[in-house]
Length: 307
Ligand code: GLN
Image (cartoon, rainbow, N blue to C red; front, top):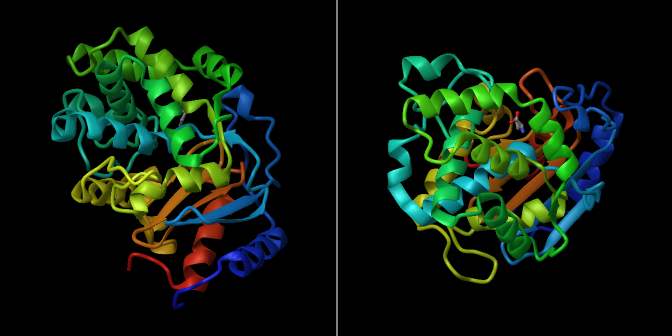
């Protein structure tokens, strides 16, 4: 499709199609505070580079961002320490579930990539060392980029994650044993669970992702990442952003994307726009069923993809 393109009719069409689609998957139940979400909820937003936002359905409803925040902590840490991060976390798809422990021992406590939980724990640990307040730095950034001062951490969700966080604790302790965690593990886990528990809407997250479509430039025109770093983050999103379903996501959607178990998915059309879709029913990989379907429809209808 040629520019200028108003995205509203495309979103309306996708929402109508999704409405007709049975089978939405199931909300995450390993975090009890998320289990109560209604899988029929659906929202989608598209933000253009200048901050114009289009939306449909529940696009202004805040939801639990969860692993979507891993993109922002990665970008913020790269902005602080640049390539040194890559000595502590890899950039290869893991082919394993997001909370898997198995590769860590073979690979000496260096996680495969920053988007599986192990890798995100390393990133948050390093961002915390750089800033003294990883979750606060993330929240400030999301507020600034979305223009929404009301974005906040849901402390009940953070407490629920903490109470059921044995796997993440195991990952953090294991990596600490390899010297790959700098802060005390309880401090890191607290930052990580609070990071995951930030609530934001599709509109907020589509806007906050804008710097990745603007090749590293923030909403206020300042630069967060170099052009190469923005390209690198997009590349890692494409290859690792949806865990052991990243190949299928690239095949169906054809965009850098990042999912979270709250049911949100963000995606980037570099140089053009950013998207966020939310529907809390998940597939077996922890990706939103209706969310991935909606992004699939978006790139099919508009032809906007990186391929
Ligand atoms: N807070 C979740 C966890 O650590 C995030 C996982 C996800 O969204 N995939 O298990």
